[in-house]
Image (tube, rainbow, N blue to C red):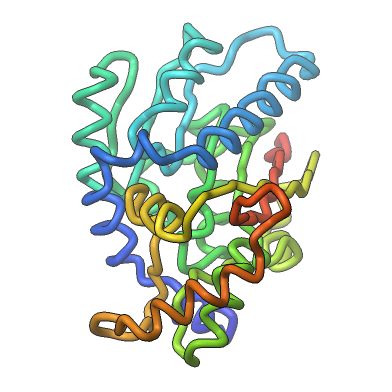
Length: 277
């Protein structure tokens, strides 16, 4: 119970939904990290499924946290005969996705990942790239993933770890004591929340570093994809110019020999399998 309260205090789910909805149109133009991570997760998915001695292709695939449907389309290119359930908490994202991706074979669903409006054992493959970190209760999330996965089904997941954007977080820490950067959980906390019928088949931790000329390019990217500060306890009101100048000065300490400012991300890739009956 204490763990659930801690996680709920870190992420505001209503802020997640509204923020990503507002970012629907600008998202694809700034989602360089999301593209790189999603491509790696998709490659992992394809490789793992190729190893499975399964006679039939998956019938139902769930893209959990589908956003603009970019990877829903890529999944369809790999699994042409499957039906696709594309779910996101942000209605604005889904409206944009339906407009740019079309309808069939996709079913666009606005719902909470912690309360999936799907039948038990109805999903053969669950794909979720960089969406888990926006959930409040990992125990409930994984319980739902387990419930909807068919026996023998697989979940391919990517999520951000606690070292993500450490440069930005530490630069802010020298300015004030407010929470300015989203906080994410470590791998061990994730697996501690897995139900007994979900086993970890594969886990990979990888660092991704984006580079920018100026700090405002990073903060603009975060805003354009809807991933700016969504902590429930964030400070209210505008940040003063003096604090922004100090933040920029602090971040300059991380400028690299190539003249670029780094933005580091800690990414976990997981393949989970639902136990067969």
